[in-house]
Image (cartoon, rainbow, N blue to C red; front, side):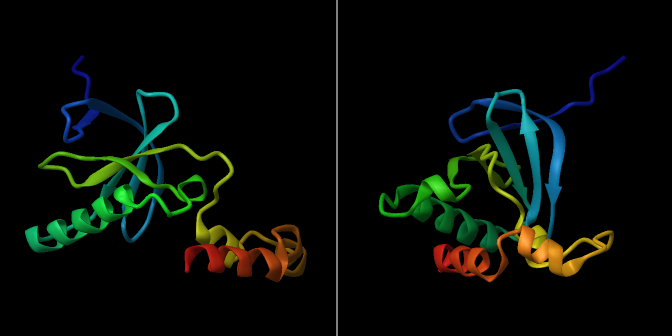
Length: 131
């Protein structure tokens, strides 16, 4: 039986097997890889112009030493064409913003969810770090 596992390469030629999709949204999808602690984000980029702009912004983030990389999923390497995206470290303590901003439809007690997840103090802290 043929292995249908998807593979991508970074700009240095390192090969990553995309094993499990762990997130998806408007910007793209995030995958676990065959390297412990490394994830790949595949971006939804539709034109070459948007791709160049996306990579320009990623390179800026990668070169900035004054950014708090320990608290953001910063790109470690860029993906090579034909794919668009980057390699990043797995950060176990991170949660998607939508989990913090909106309760799930299954949540029975919204006020308990809000307090349990850090209330206003945590949300202001996150917004401060993002700014």
